[in-house]
Length: 84
Image (cartoon, rainbow, N blue to C red; front, top):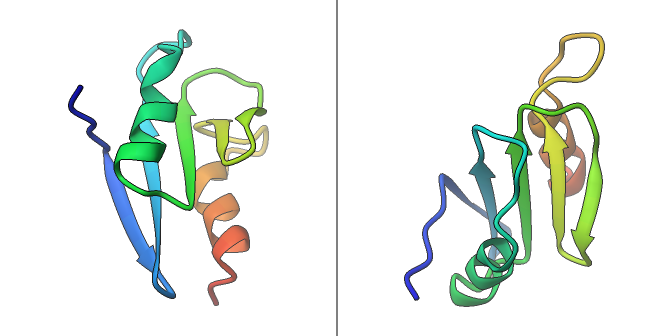
């Protein structure tokens, strides 16, 4: 199986990924396969829904926007990666 990702970030020698979905249905094995194949430290799946949830230890599903309209994935990635 071939893994692909929408955004690959490198930070302090680790690899992080973001996958953007245009519907609320998450294809079950795809995120875990990408996490393994691409040797990611963490993967965020961004979708148009309104719930944040954990798929497994290193995979989170995030809504595109918080209730206040700010971009949640950027905020979470910045906090997780401890960027200034």
